[in-house]
Image (cartoon, rainbow, N blue to C red; front, side, top):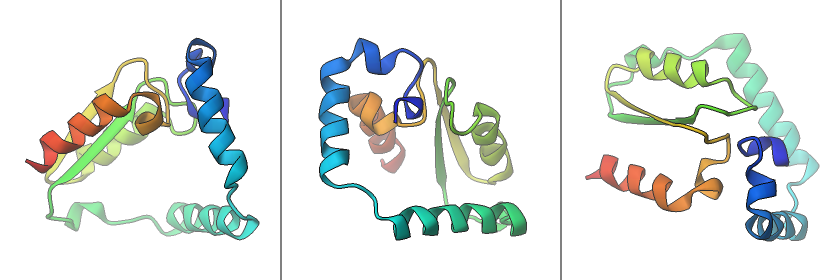
Length: 113
């Protein structure tokens, strides 16, 4: 789980990380859920998605130190979406809402306004 956070975040935020880990251990994802997630990702890689046809406003938020999905993935997605707003958070990893919930929530609220 530490890889879902920015490098050094878990160590610098030990108490918060321990809280998040405790909740995850109390409520672990089932094998079925993990398998379904993997299958959905694989299907996306195999078939792709024509996001260029999506006309609804979209928000793409990506941490620039994400070790799960490269930051270029978020940049590319935002560039392909016709009505996207792209926000890149310096020093943030994959788990943006858990790393910095206040900033993440503010970005989402600003977008929805």
